[in-house]
Figure 1 (cartoon, rainbow, N blue to C red):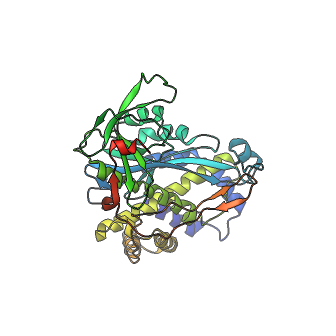
Figure 2: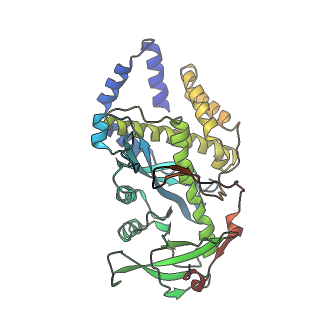
Figure 3: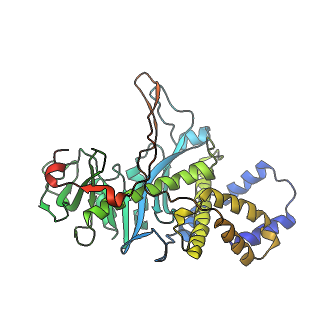
Length: 385
């Protein structure tokens, strides 16, 4: 922040009134994207403390992994470096970059990112950010991530894992535990004879009012350290990574169709710049939450973006300490309900065989307490679903 203020003061004193777009592009080209990547790796890290509400489960720091795509301008260089999505009737209009992120659930701080072309699988990109996992973390992931290779590499970091698995993955009951979870062996899809597997704990459960069966696998084998019911309820904290990606794509990018950059190196530079801006906002929101003894989820991200946009234009007229105090005070002015307790899946659009666009129906959102609504299933019942 001090560096930013010093730079802004110099710019406001000496810069001309107008700066052409070409000058900005030339300046960005001189900086390059590797500088932004190094800055991200140097500054960005999990920020929750023991006083942060909703950031820990017992001694585990809650983190989640997920991926998304970002549309970029349709230029010859971008098409060559990235890919356009298929639509069933041809190629999409804009190339897309795929990113996979690690997010601290309690603060929404993104502390790991991998950027690649759209054609790359999320599992491939996920391997690049596994070194960011540390002992004492509990990493949650959706059903697209459990592969034998990725599971072994992630668990080798010392972090514990809690991932949902697809229904076509076979997990036999080797030993039933008192909390209705059971121990099983997770094998690679190519290991047809099941000679090389890894021991996991399986937690099958349902949400009250639904017939759908969910299965989680975890590296936490001792049911006394983390009961099945608590882990099943805890898994829904994974939705915080979805909310984090929404903050970037909807609020920071202001629902723009694409990024601005027309060259692949500048695309990466812009993505890292957006992630650094998001981290700066989330860090200030975390400081405000600690000062008021609030869950960071009770502070408005949209309001915080507006506060920084307004206050930084006046950064040259006050000291850093005054500016920081003013930003924290303004962030605390608007409170929102926590995003925890999601009950329904997002509406999405899918293409039918003839190419007709269909929109899935969404249900009315009613907040739910997962801790009291999760029912862990016995192994006999779960094996039938």
